[in-house]
Every structure is written in structure tokens, then in C-alpha cells.
Image (tube, rainbow, N blue to C red; front, side, top):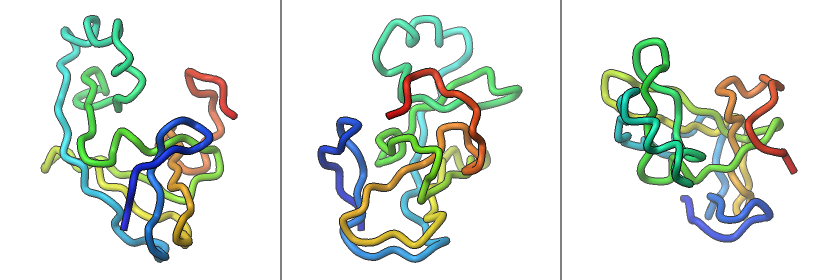
Length: 122
């Protein structure tokens, strides 16, 4: 249902078939980066691909699978939910998505959150 290919943002995740609103796109297992180790990760490009995680959001999580490859949009067609009991981030279609369409999430978590992110949005 998903594939990685070039997008206007670099690499992105695209639908290979039509996807219905609410459909599970990916259940990405995560690797937790403890708070005290994040200072090392911040010096790498990988720091741009992590999610805030854990108690008081002090840890970070690298999502495996497609999870860390979804690009940002303030008008997303997908959303994500943290599943702390299973250490996964689940991605769902927020709208119907057509085959060939890039799948985008709002990095702020809430699809309607218009808060600035840490990079310039195209």
C-alpha cells in the first residue's frame, strides 16, 4: 500500500493504491533514545527524524518502517498516534488518499495545529 520515492521534500511516502480515511497505514516500531543520550543525537542528521517520547516527552523515538519518512504538512492527509504500551507509532489516513498521492502528517501531532516547526515549510 506504501512506497518510498522522491518528492518535492526529498524522499517521501506515497500510496500505491487508494486508501480510505481511518485506515491503518503503518504501525512503526520505535527505538527509544533516552534523554541523557539525546545530546549526542542532536549533532546528527537523525535528530530531524525523531518524535518526542516518554514521561514528560523528555526521551526521543526513532520510528522504524515508514514512520520517520512521512513528510510534514499543515494540511495533512494522515495522522499518527503514540502507542506507548507497544512502543509503536501508528499512522492512519486522516482523509481519503488516492493512489500516487504523497502521504503527509502534521509534525505537531494534531492535524489542525498550525504552530511553527523547526524548519521552513515549503
